[in-house]
Image 1 (cartoon, rainbow, N blue to C red):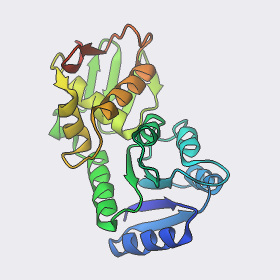
Image 2 (cartoon, rainbow, N blue to C red; image 1 turned 135 degrees about the horizontal axis):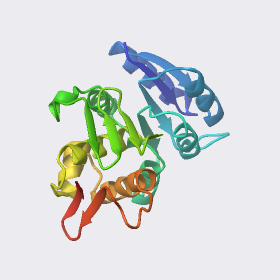
Image 3 (tube, rainbow, N blue to C red; image 1 turned 180 degrees about the vertical axis):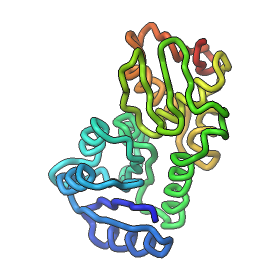
Amino acid sequence: MKKVLVVDDEKLIVKGLKFSLEQDDMEVDTAYDGGEAFEKIQNNHYDIVLLDIMLPVYTGIEVCQMVREFSNVPIIMLTAKGEDMDKIMGLEYGADDYITKPFNILEVKARIKAILRRSGKKVEEIKPSNTLEINGMKVELDSRRVFVQGKELNLTAKEFDLLELLMSHPNKVYSRNELLELIWGKTYPGDARTVDVHVRRLREKIELNPGEPLYIHTKWGVGYFFKK
């Protein structure tokens, strides 16, 4: 049984999501402000978090930032705002996906299942080896842990998926649209900027000097590749 945390200050939304997700045999915990949400994530194991952006105490983005200091739990942002920059900001601060209100509960369930499926996928789908090692970087596929020069890094679920794909096929150039489809899925409503944001954040974590990357390089006008 998957355990989900639903965070929103609108009690009717929380009640509706809780009821619907429980119909799919999920265990659902709830919180109504950012402080309560952060405390619960600290003290419990969740398979995924649905997190509203506009919350009392701490905003959803602030919660996301704080959680990413210690956890890679998948986070889907819920936002009533439709501006592209708000969506990108949510992803930039460590979220894995976003859904704009008002939403269809079937879409919410589909997004949750897609993320859980990617997070728990068999590593053999990409490469038989359980460990990838290139130029001082080691990626343990089973445990989804990443080490650079022996130091463990804290990546989000999407950052890990992106790194795993590129590193599994070194020197292969992927376009932004290819990465968007492979990592986020064909039905994902975002655009290529989502990929750029995640690559930038990934570089900030894995590269000694993100401006002169050792691992993930840009093929100008085409996309990105992992250099071997």
